[in-house]
Length: 185
Image (cartoon, rainbow, N blue to C red; front, side, top):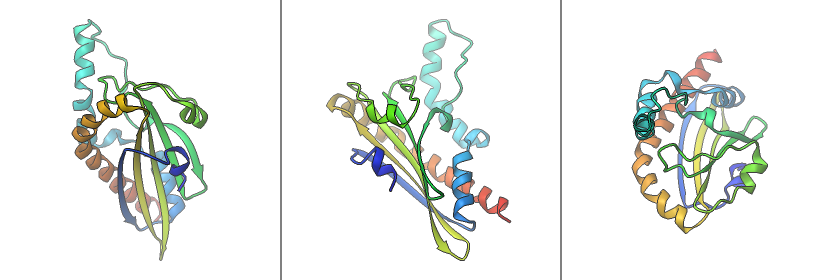
């Protein structure tokens, strides 16, 4: 898989899949274009996650935050394998109130990123043709902590956010599947 090129080894992983009644190319394109802005559960989960950062801003006197809620827009497109897989990446200290995200321009930045106390995260969407206009859509998240300090800090964060992250991934897949099915009719 293409994700192996970017995060071949990892300490944390989450994978979800769904069968969809649509062509694989349509499903993957729908996944690439997906934005969770209209999902109230995802918006609520992100708002709860971002509450500490907003509270810190308010304490510092920054009452008008110009930050956009975290979404797939925060990710950098790393690579695409035809109509079979796409990989996005993040780098930084995700457990920090402000996500500790380091801006990445491209896949080379992602591969080179090696800051002490930080991690790399890859998120993919992959599709597999099952025949009869059926497609298996999968998403996988892998996190590689760059050192022991990062792993020590990321581990409790992972176990705290993992149930909600899994819910978000399943909601994403369901929405992508529904959208691809409806648009493919």
